[in-house]
Length: 145
Image (tube, rainbow, N blue to C red; front, side, top):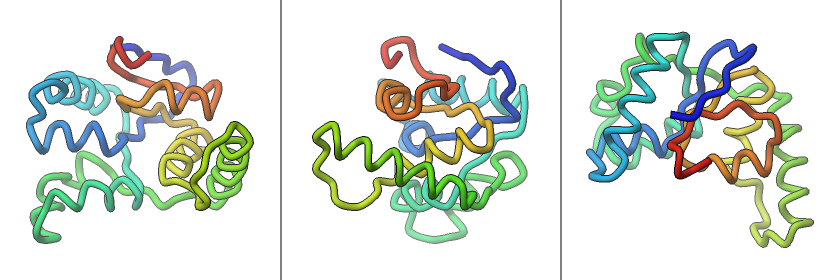
């Protein structure tokens, strides 16, 4: 597990990590479960409405989703307004680098949320987040660094 948590106040979990665990992904479930368990042991662990939304597609009902992501273990956080500002700047830079998506992508909000709240992001998409948000603290599998 690659980890840099200097002044982090907790962890934000990306949807890919939760989906690995929920779907018992044969490649990533073990790493994701260990990374999440270590984060829970160390500090507060959060998701935001975007992560919740992305993970919700794996469930047929809201109660099933809430049971899979217990709020007493993985806390719910609103998106900070300042994350919207930072996400828009990240999207603008993405477009200047040749990105074609016209609307701000959820990953920009997720990364911006982690940055403005000083959270360490647990994700398998480390390269994308580090490119977009230099200095963002990330926990990722060694192959994703």
